[in-house]
Amino acid sequence: MNKSVQFLGLGLLVLSMANCKPETKNNVTKEEVNAKVEKPAQVNEHTLVTERPKAVTTPEGMVWVSGATFKQGAVTSDKMAMDHEKPAIEVMVDGFFMDATEVTNAQFAAFVKATGYVTVAEKGIDWEELKKQVPAGTVKPHDSILKPGSLTFKKAKSSVPNLYDFSQWWNWTIGADWKHPNGPKSSIKGKDNYPVVQVSYEDALAYCKWANRRLPTEAEWELASRAGSNGTIYNWGDDVSVLKEKANTWEGEFPVENTLTDGFELRAPVKSYPPNAYGLYDMAGNVWELTSDWYNTKYYKDTKAKNTVLINPKGAENPFTPNNPLAKERVIKGGSFLCSASYCASYRVSARMGSSMDSSLEHTGFRTVATVDMITE
Image (tube, rainbow, N blue to C red):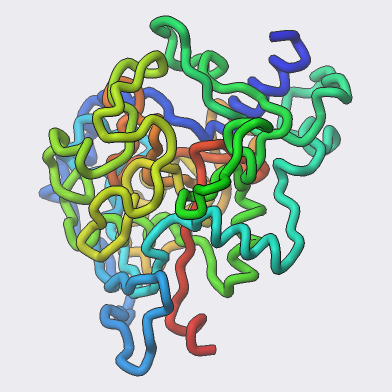
């Protein structure tokens, strides 16, 4: 890899941080030890919307997510929970409609056909924008590198001792975009029912505007994923032994060999696995899903200190990532086909990562939500 390519590829990798990171076991925090003796959080007066109004019809392809008060974030029994997922905070979220599946290639194609929209990955890279996210004095790559493209996954040929070096399995690939998710020679022909990927936050917002939808907040996404199973590590319970039956993840030695125990090596068609209790598919594995919240590693700790029940929270006021201070990232949820027990267990409900708004990858997509007022207005 020459220096220009290495800069661009690694720059985007480090700045986006939109891929899985090794999950590490953390020591039990003081908050967790004292969880049972905490003072009850203060509750502001709010009438919780739980049931779908009878006069409102559920939009095609969506399901109703019942409103509830619940603890968002890592449960105390989750030994894989990371610091940025805890301590859990109490939230109150009104009911809403959510897409039963990730937005598919067919749905995104309909949007592009109707609007002529061009995604970020299909445009040349704006160096003036990119250099705002890298250390001062960074040398501009050659113009031949700043062409339309995105990041694609590649297997390693041998065991990888350092799972923090993302360049060992990610490539900057010119010509990779939503129509060519694995590179210019790949295609989505015959894959209408696969989740669309290689779309950035900006692209997802454009789709939402066209469809009269919006991205879910992290709280909404977590409420929907739990589907009433509050207090469990996974949206189906605490039994990880059934993972291969529940989600499309990486099984085997990452990133060298995928045993395909769950039936798929890369992305799977939507509805390939059983839905959760609300009828939502792929809320664990397959592809990461964008939310509207800023990614801030201190969000849960800062919120917990306020000791109040948040009503329809929209996340942190500002982005913050200690090892990536120049990038502005949004929270992604659910994990992907690259998540494995040995490397990344982000198929857990509380798992979260950050993705820069101008990044697109072959394992990241989105689904949309709508509130009752959006449907009836």
